[in-house]
Length: 226
Image 1: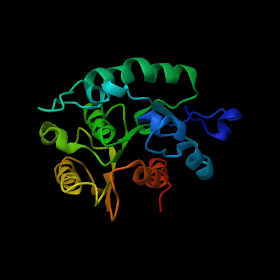
Image 2: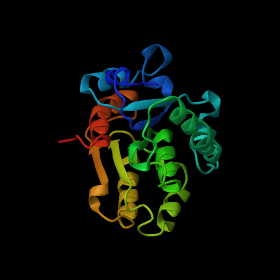
Image 3: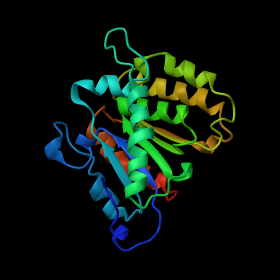
Image 4: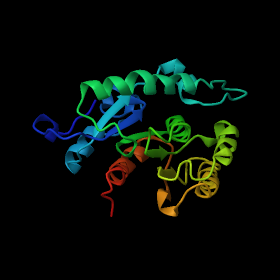
């Protein structure tokens, strides 16, 4: 959990960001690939935002974060994990912390499979997650995520917002698939302003890329970006 400095003395209700892969977010000692420095970034920005970081289940990570199975890598148990967030974790957080539980103040985010999951969670529950940070989403995992987006009833996600980023050196398909999804998704939204999307020159599929993007994404969550 991250709470801002002002939390100690304020009586306000705070927005909440649910982030995947907690092992890589706060402390290099819990990650074998580097950390995002979420706490240092938010402290420096002085954002009034609570972050709930959820650890992945190690060998269960693929199961948890994938909505649909892959013929080789299997998985496809994301609904169980999503139900845990919706029915157990979020109610507990809202009961213990001074949160603003409304959709416009509830965010979700992640990278790679965590980006895929965060996108899926927002499509499935646009009444819960108002904004999603989607770094390097693994849209390659199953074509069904594109089918799900195609099936969305227009204006059912008319207020939701999406922040997409991917590196141009991640893979041959990462950036093209992200923009393919953007094209499909944008046709379902009320305004192009609901999507903030960019590819990062020289960006690779690693924590260094996502750590470098987090400050801008956090400002976007709070409507403070340039």
